[in-house]
Length: 171
Image (cartoon, rainbow, N blue to C red; front, top):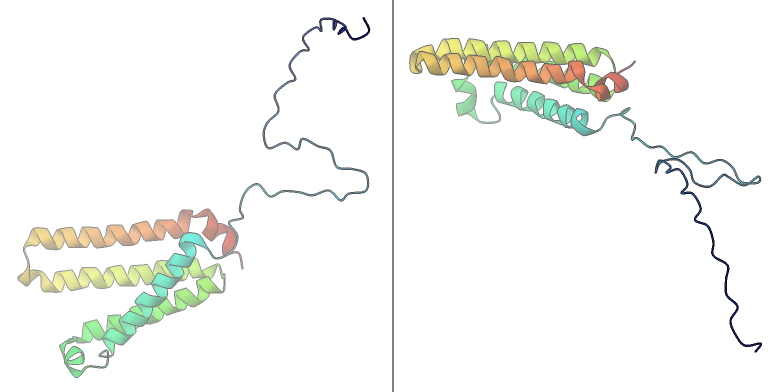
């Protein structure tokens, strides 16, 4: 009866190993291998995300304001601009283009340039709304002024509170 299976002795249950966190390494490096580190979070340093979007939009606003203030290539558009429109259009365009350049160069003063650009643009929006009050109801003008100031304040808060802006603009 050499072919008969031999019974196996019963085994005692082993205690369960303590659960490990999924991000801890499971295998130790061998003696001859270099240690490899894994970056677990993407760096916020550098132009990207909403900061890149803001730079592109501010640059387009700057170019658009300068082109609009200088007539945009058509004579009818240039004649319809008031001196205030022309002055603020050029001023806003230069301010936004300077902000775009400073932010792209990752200069810390770019934040101040953004605040100044937004303040000039908001001031122009309020002045334009007040000049055109005769054409619109008072409630509409008030809503426009509040909306303009609120939008520019929210954009300024992005430059104040963004971690990407703080880590990128350090020069």
